[in-house]
Length: 141
Image 1: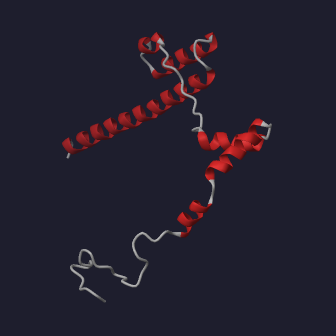
Image 2: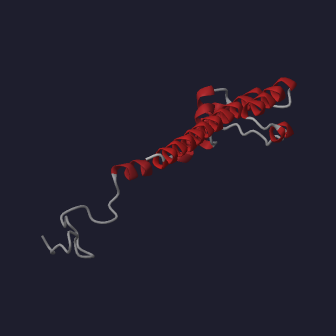
Image 3: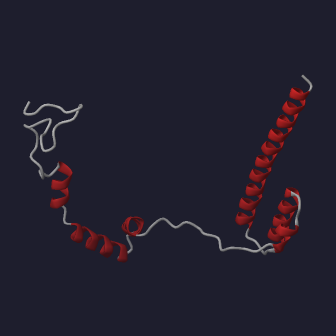
C-alpha cells in the first residue's frame, strides 16, 4: 500500500490499487466500438430498407425515432363543470363518447380517472367519520 486511509478513504491522488489499469485505458466495449464502421452499417441498412427489406427498415426506425406515444388533444366538456356528483360526471363523459365529441379511449381514461377520484373521496369520508367517532368517544369518557 502506498498511502494511509483517511476516515476510510484514500488520500486524494492515491489509488487503492496502484497496480491497476492506468487512467484512460480503453475498455473492451470501447475497443469494439472503434472497430465497427457505423457509417457503413447505416448506409447498408438504408439501402436494404429502400430495396424493401422490412427488417432493415424496422431496425432503422426503431433506433432513429422515439416510440410514438399517442397524445390526446385537450377537450372541453362543460357538462363536467355543471355536474355536481361524480356519477353525473361519468355520465357526461359517456354521453360525449356516444355523441362522437370524445374518442372512446379518452372517454375510458376519463371515466377511470373519475373512479379513482371517487375512491379517494371515499377514503376522505371514512377518515372524517373515524375522526368524528373518536371525538365523540373521547367526550363520553
